[in-house]
Length: 359
Image (cartoon, rainbow, N blue to C red; front, side):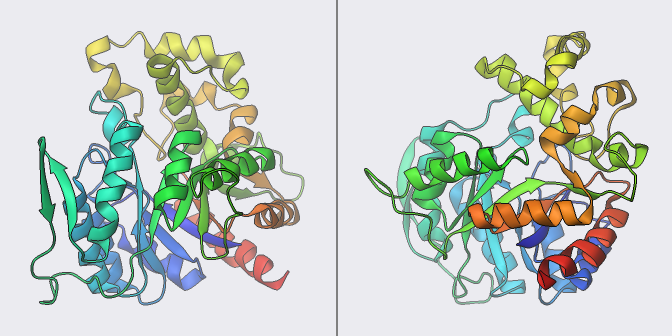
């Protein structure tokens, strides 16, 4: 099982990427959300210049904010700096779209975006729709050093449900799951991905196809419990991001809240809906995957943490990850809260990664 890091892109914190490489992490996934963080491609460029081995890519690039030709040229520029270790993770958009008051891109449009993107990632011509016009488009100077299409750029597609994960199977070289750390959920997501690979009874996911899940990890000290202040500090932002996502699904798609959120749901909804509707989209994801706002601290329950994060002793976490590996998961990428991020990756790098390699 590989361990990567999802990074809240910060133009002034490239040392974090450098340290991850030193600690033996497998990959760095730079998040793309233009109204929260620094630009992911600018931070990727700096990280590519200061690292030499670790795999680098987007985690995830958002299809609704950049057309396929722009996305292809952006990641191919990074591939010129980090040849052979660059990948592209792409999705229909959560915060990047919703913080602008928009829904993620529709499944039909996301399907078309991925079909447009795949040839462009190889430097080939693609038929692309822009502003209602359909034109053949290709990079016309790919051999002058501006970009690199010679070294392959794997395409990993993010999904949360059967339709988007089917697109990951249809178009991707791999799939990205945002999943509660429960094996049954992982297995269901894998089946959804396989469904996009072929008509009728799909073949099992091959060894060449790569699967990655987003979570975070906290290793418990002897006698420490999941309700300790340290666990809350390290996992609270991930737990709250799950609640933010659930609220958007509830208000936009009529999805029921997760069971772990039921005891706090009414109070949380009342707090959010006290914000005027025309500004509410700016408030829902405040602190997203970085900090827990003071007024949201009371919502970070042990149940919510368990539903979104992987917490346990070293032996327990290793056992869970081995089970996920046997089920078909290749990698997890961890996204710790911002302030304790260094201490989290130090401990994971010094304890968990060596333990997994020695098992």
